[in-house]
Length: 165
Image 1 (cartoon, rainbow, N blue to C red):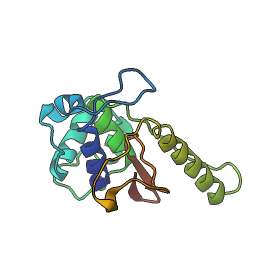
Image 2: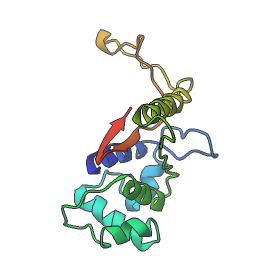
Image 3: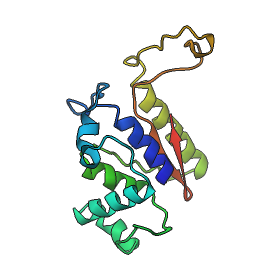
Image 4: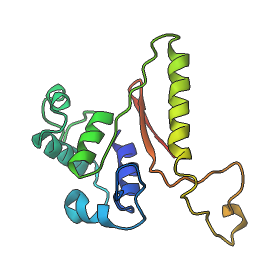
């Protein structure tokens, strides 16, 4: 969870917050100015632990804090999506948590729901994404690669996490 959260934070530090709900943030530095005391750098593992504890102290994810004994700093405890959401929200990021549960059909239905949601999430940012310009033939945009302006997703499943770009 820590490394995936660091990747998401690294992306956010280079963006500005959306001006209105439902819109994308513009490239810039306002998140860097407001997150983690305005230092503009991705926190190390101990920093993420400290900022998560700080989020708990501010009232974010008190249930999760209780489950982890209200202590992360210097421990080997794993963090999950909800700890990441608490940390981001406490830093002014409108983080959203989505849970996929299949009522019928088991895992296959849940995976299909997840895939559709992820695809729609990134598709909403395709029109706004600038096409990369490069003289290097390797970096030239071409199908089937698609560029989206949407931030990466932090995906957690069965005790593991992944970054989806």
